[in-house]
Length: 402
Ligand SMILES: [Zn+2]
Image (cartoon, rainbow, N blue to C red; front, side, top):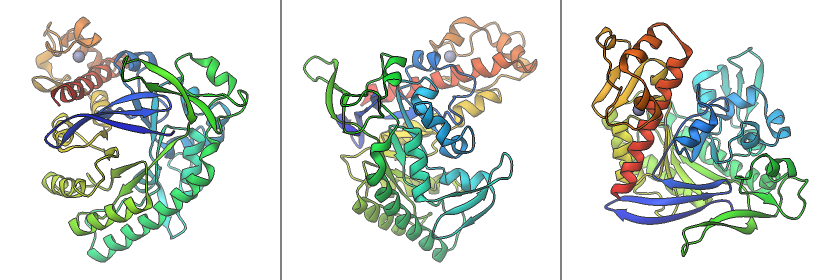
């Protein structure tokens, strides 16, 4: 098995479910914190577990450049490297090549680009991006796509969508031929943490290939039990098509024909007005299969993650809670708080009286404001813990309301 998606309760178009990954269950709809460089900036993994993060997002582009895919693979894969026993999703690197790198050149074959770190030349294609993601070993990996820029004229959007479809086929073909090379299941891997759910049964010293043990839930008892089966990664396809509703429909239908384990909507929040994002998202969602996980990439604000969960999305990710935290922008039950403001200098109350996170339980607004003003590392740590906690609580409430 690679991924099983079980849908439980539904309410209107929203659904509550469980993604059963080789590294444990993920309750959906889920918000996935972004751990770009194999870390959610400033937050140790044990605190992420305490916050009940069940799945993290890693960025292939960054890990490919540093420390390098072979380095991570030789250390047992991303889970083991960063000591994270729960589920991970990696992006394909496509979006970041388009947004971060210099001197990129896109051809049918792939993208040549220069590293934003040292200017060195690199090449990512559907095959090399998929190979990189197999080497990292995330539970869910993404097809390599081209993120169409906004605005773009009709012929450009069509050509970009067609190339993304050809790249999706190549990603899928490469994945099917190489997915057994995922770096799980070595003896050291199992020894690292008793919580890891995948172990090779046929050859414990080799990366898992073929028969491995995977956790599965027992409906009768509600417990997670080990079962045996083929345990490997899942590959998701990405729907593109710019802001053109008809092209989005066509992209969805043709991506579904290629047959992926789940489907994502990409190429949004690239500068278009919010109302247009919503319109494209809503119309595209109608064309995605109901029995597969549906992932909206790069969204959003607390209001948006609630709104899109209600529409029927199962997975979302965004750098907003973590990035905003590092800039002193905090999300609370009473709205946004910019902690740098002088009005909080003598405020002895908690950041959010309705929040049960360890920051709100212990520290005052005055102290958080002081840490931020003094540019202390702890400001970033505490702010990020609270914002993540707020996002995760928001999604927990959404799940309970379904
Ligand atoms: Zn809090």
